[in-house]
Image (tube, rainbow, N blue to C red; front, side, top):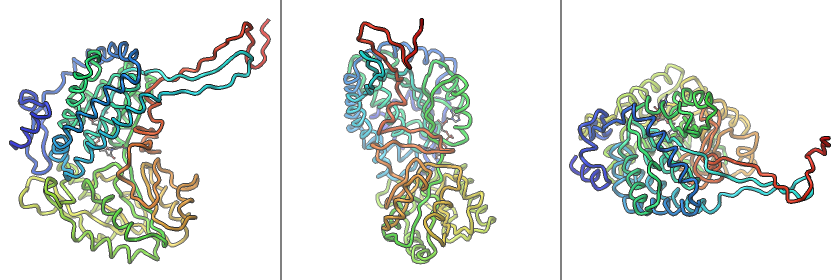
Length: 501
Ligand code: NAD
């Protein structure tokens, strides 16, 4: 406990902030309370939004590469605080320390990407059908962006959004998950230190809101927030999406996944095994991109399962801060209840439990919810398989025909986030990533569905939300496009050859 308190202090979270409030934060490692944060008063929300609007009027005029300098400084601050923030992520979310550090590295990487992006916010020029005319597109800052995050990526998802929003000229209001606000606060403090060094940011450029669903709702419902980026469950997305649409706002919804790996007869099974392990049990199955379904050809199923079961038998489950441990705890009792329920339902629906599915005995921490990752052989893609259980439950589905059959099973779920195929057969691989293949936002070849780099656009289709963030051209979501037709002739010809009088 004293270690985490000194890390809080080093990260700019003093005792006046982490103690004496109403929002209890627990460590899933042992179930102990590690902070009582002061919640933002709901009455303050209109003032926060108004400050963001005034910051926008100033920030949009700052040249984009200068805005990029602020994000460059943020990246420096994150580099300096990487070990501390990674530690908080581990303590607060229960990720193994390697993954905690990896999460901060992702935040650093997106800063680097955003700095480069700050010099590349470009539009197109388009030829005109009229003589002496030119058409061009410009991208302008959009306005305040609300960033609402899920518990499982408390540092990186804030940075994904804030780094890009800031170079695009948008102020940011950040509401971290009530289950893991401290990692978000530490990441936010690093940004505040960068702002101090930068010295020319308007007041209210970045603001933090500590609270729960009603705080999120105040941001979602405000017409003064043109873009809401919300990461979390499909249940949350169903509430947020229509509210933003009702006021004609823009949204980035990053919701649940039901990610699969297709393993064909021509797969490298040892590579697939390594990807299954990181994909299914990494972060104790609590990544949006966690591997939840393996769709394996019957010709290689037995060999694969033997390898996987042997590896599962040796998984180190326990204190995520200890080197060598691969599986930390679930976030809380609610997550454990969902895990137990899914394991029971799968068996009711005809599944055979091959391993795991129980509470793991970690003597040191009786208050933590540790589990033995489950593998369940399913006769068909039943209701429970089609549902995202945010815990380490891996369903095995079998196919017996060609790649088309595997893809049919693959796509027959409501979610569409990430997917992958293991095969050395070029026809199978190309089919899987073709227009008739995986219907997910991400379709990988010979790597697992999780652990994406920030350079590509991240997000998924169907109930995952349909939007994208991080790299590629996702920055366009954070900007407003204008099309300008410029007439440099001395005539006024109309388009489509219209002769008006
Ligand atoms: P959650 O939906 O319970 O909460 C997410 C955030 O939304 C929290 O900050 C919460 O306070 C807020 N919220 C909830 N209801 C709201 C409402 N009606 N209005 C405004 N804000 C609201 O999710 P969680 O349990 O923290 O996270 C796990 C889920 O997130 C999983 O489904 C996982 O797949 C998903 N996830 C998706 C991605 C992605 O990029 N697709 C990334 C991480 C997590």
